[in-house]
Image (cartoon, rainbow, N blue to C red; front, side, top):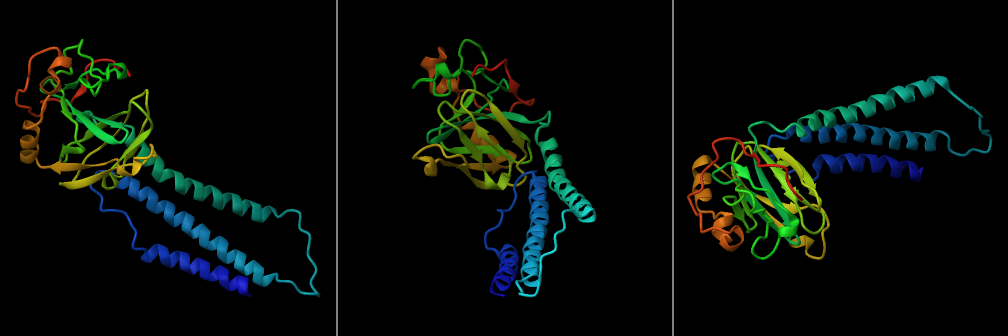
Length: 290
């Protein structure tokens, strides 16, 4: 009987903790409500199965507890039970997969109007690169990274010299404008994660990964590295500031280009023209060299 009581209390306590838990999602600040929906459906389905299994176990422990006058009954198979288990399990798996597949279908389809930016993660700091007046991000090559060219921009091509470089940990974005985030790392695996945006992606050395989202409300949101990347992992933080158009243009106008910050590496004189929003969605200038 003690075990039965423990199992019942475990089921009740688990549900109560989930319902009244003080730890929950941060308020969403992007278009990815479908990710929240997928997680909610997962909670409901797994929660129902969890409670059902725990209570069924408690019932079996009580109903078939040991008695001296009771003998076990050998039943090698039960076709009806097996059919029901197959149907219920299949329905549960379909219910778990469907919301995630719907969200993933949207996740991999980047809108044509999305603006490309680059997040450069390295131990243990963030850097960001935005397209300049030409609306295109320049080519990069990790072999070109040095003190005068921390992003490894290939200066043999005209694109890239006007790229806006953000070497601090603060990135500004324009509210309600889709953003395609290109992710690079020169050292180890990192993960760019802003909880309020829901979407995230690993940053893998030797390749460019990406994801997209649309910030839907203004504010300041903390950037976290969601992949253990060394002893300084805990301190690899930053912030994303989502601005209205007026504030964003004001901030952007105060940022420096690659040519302005590193004229020696760029091989030209300072090009600190006032930065403006690209007229068209940004695309990579050509095939990227990793």
